[in-house]
Length: 95
Image (cartoon, rainbow, N blue to C red; front, side, top):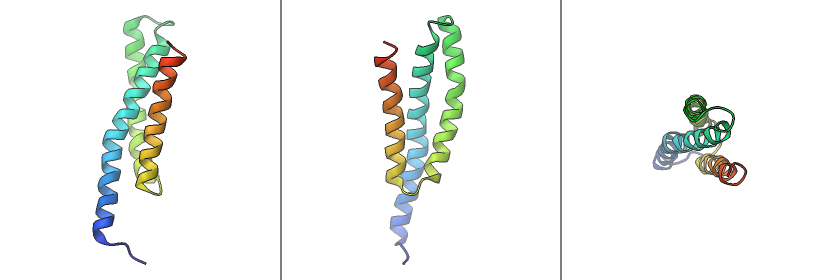
């Protein structure tokens, strides 16, 4: 059974939006968490520098996740969930 072309276009558009926006959000949450975790160990400048570097990898992983998942809804759920967990850990454990 074939899906209508408009539905397929919406799914691709949602995945692209999830890759760009969700990937950026996940990367930002990872940078916030890593920087806060590294500040006590390193200085502030070094913690920001070292915490930002893995953010690029997280962004790339978010893009891969967006197109590897079975449905676009699942992509958004994973991205929001991962970002929420990282931010929650930052403000609870590392407060």
